[in-house]
Length: 340
Image (cartoon, rainbow, N blue to C red; front, side, top):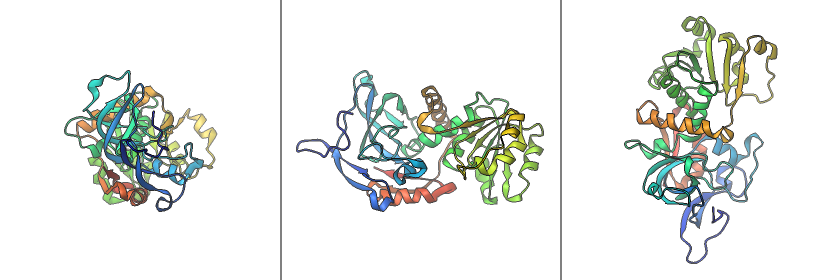
């Protein structure tokens, strides 16, 4: 960007309201809202007037300093996901993009300036056309969670005719994984911890629901897939690895994006003897081709009504500290957004 987000506005500058932090810590201690210069798009970039900023646990983790993360920039405007309208383009971008509704992803990946602002600049390829009839709030929630869910399903290749387990199917990543796996032709088994989640998992697109609260997960899976399952989109590798090994077929795959214990040992020989592939996922560094494939499939799924995120809470920009705290608590109840 030609105007760094650390700059303070000067007289005559076009300004916007934005949230930011200059140190890591608790939301109400470090988050501020103020005026900053409106950014200008550089080559291959577009500027989006943000309508809705989506919050993901990864945004909260960066602000807290979880997972050993540090601040790479002196001032950070948070949130990687959002949706709005393209209002300016840089060189090498078709000017006809101005006025188009888009959803954006990776806005704050290796960049200081995210979507918790009235304007955001992103690479043009990270601003994806938002279909008519799809609200900005849904578009604002597709990015981090949706692309991770897609990668958890497709990192090993197509799934048509395969059997896929999606753990935590009502979370941000899980809902996307269920939708794209079903859309891709897989038989989808979703695991739930509470009886009241069964219908929600089926409405999300799962073909079968594994009721963990009944305590016989392995038997339930084998009744549906006696030959074993092909892939698992795993939200807790450490907690579920033993059960995963029991239900996976030989040459099966686990794609994991979280764990309850980062230092837990893995049962190496049991994995090796079944030729199990384990794919570790971190959204910031997927291949660009995987991001683009995910963006296309997620856009199609949300346009078809196959992927919908319930909104747990909405906040104005001034309420960003409360919004980030709410995002940590929301879980399967839904997602949290900021309306601009």
